[in-house]
Length: 455
Image (cartoon, rainbow, N blue to C red; front, side, top):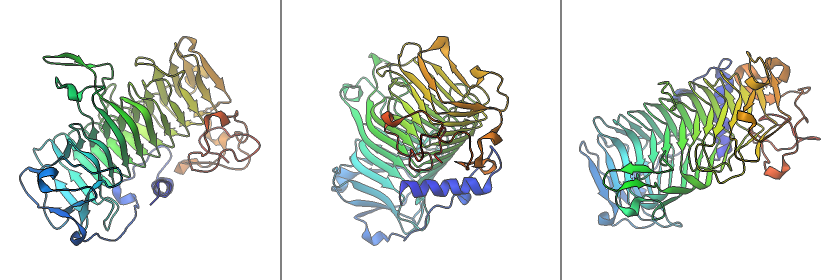
């Protein structure tokens, strides 16, 4: 199934079933897609069920590139599964998947459900099942799935992860005194994380990369720099009721993309500085677009990135703090943060706050900010100490009805004929933005429209 169709299914649930500015879309509400059940007879290996920790050493098992390792839905997996030495190739990754239906890995008093170690070129997928999420992870004291110990070049999709003690999905290798773990010697590359449903986590939904880009103290060897991530895409995921940030991505210096995700009711623990819908952390550049973020205790989309970050065509509703926020506390290599054609509805604080004083080319154009208690221009868009920012063709109002959205009560922000923002945007052709939030063509009239939807 394509990304766009999957997102449309999630949004259909949102539009049809939820009141203004508040919604919860549980798994039962999430229509998903049904498909054929994969028979275990097609698998190269089937992992035995167990109540004890299982370590699967793929080198010892004789796993070859292109092989399929299966988890059997008819068996019980009641403890952690650790996969070591998965070595596929780019053309023939090793596949870990479910067979005979949905596999439940439910553990207690264990730090994780699934872990990978010293592995490369593999995919963990629950895509072959009678339901949409064919692998179900629950109950660990820390993380649902951990992709670590120098793992790289992997894809994880169609998993449901919930009721875990910390992060739903963690992907990083913390630096140690072993030089193999530090920046320059190890880089995590070519990561795809998509079409997963993560909910009711005590910590982050996704915790990706080290949050200490500038270095972390390691006993016995001083400050060590964590590895970077190159070419990571986080898309088409559904995160619900994360205790901390919905998605946190750091140290992703090259080719980072966060798009087409739905994040709802984030930061439910209300932990200060750990309560963002999306956190683009230190050392991270790239793009963030097409995300729907609704209802949380903190900032909708927050960044301390490299300064070459572009945020476009996101919809942020009912943020418990600012809609968007950036500052320059991290390492900066870009020329400015770019906020283009986003729609921000009813943030508790400022709509878009740009606290980047040293970068010369911050941009804030074609955004909609609706704030029922807006009192002055600074409650919509604020730049700290007049941070150098191009501000143009933004539309701010206290009255959502003025915009003529198609069905704002059911979170449908397409435009009706006569909307005052049609053809009122500035030219964004230089940014190579060709689709709006709904995947409709930009531009579609005499000029660009304002906000995340093109008429």
